[in-house]
Length: 251
Ligand SMILES: NC(=O)c1ccc[n+]([C@@H]2O[C@H](COP(=O)([O-])OP(=O)(O)OC[C@H]3O[C@@H](n4cnc5c(N)ncnc54)[C@H](OP(=O)(O)O)[C@@H]3O)[C@@H](O)[C@H]2O)c1
Image (cartoon, rainbow, N blue to C red; front, side, top):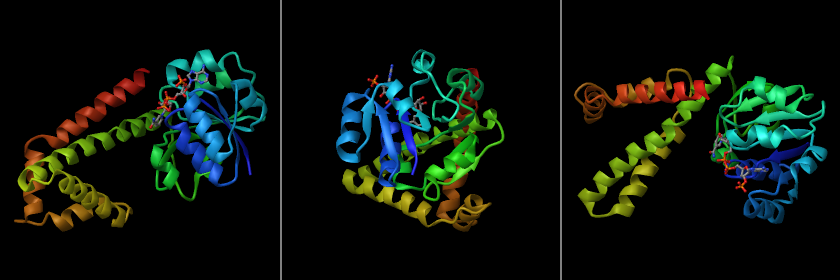
């Protein structure tokens, strides 16, 4: 079992702590946000301390600060060469991490989502991906990427999730108007899509193969895919991904 410390104990740290604590790791977290750290201490046995205590009691340090706080919080700390660094902070480069966390020598940047706690979250990762895999696989598959530009592109794609939820909410709203049953419409929509995706194989080509199996010539499904294409849904998605990707490149 590993000694794992978290610097920044907010929205994304909490599910990561719970996942790791259940697997028997020794966890130490920073006090802020106090309600979150207190709950992790009470329910998952995490120790709570100042950032310096976290460094003293951990070999693996998981950085979960907002990027704009990273410099002010990390710069005064005394990292050690045995520390292995996992950063989930969008926009803080490996180069900046190496400067902020010297003399630590092992680094990995990744993009978790909260559902990593229950498994099935793909972890795009740049750097020491074996270290990350030892912590989060097999439940959450690590997807190594070759460059930070590729990692940023994966960050951008993560924003497609709320985009798809928004589309689904529109569909559920349409159904609710037709049935006068808003709750039932939302359940049906969420269960339909999540059930389909859970059952779907994820091998190469699966997305288009499954689409084409449904959207055969003359079908209702084909009418849907063609209408979305004609009305620019795909070009809107590509524009959003390009714009988000550019924003990440600049940060
Ligand atoms: N949320 C996600 O789903 C998600 C997914 C992937 C990556 N990320 C990345 O994860 C990072 C954190 O995001 P988040 O959503 O978890 O943000 P968050 O909830 O605001 O968490 C940041 C934490 O840092 C703490 N903090 C601020 N100043 C501190 C200091 N001086 N010393 C110790 N702790 C301090 C905050 O405490 P206070 O609340 O007391 O200020 C808070 O607990 C970001 O870089 C983001 O890009 C987030």
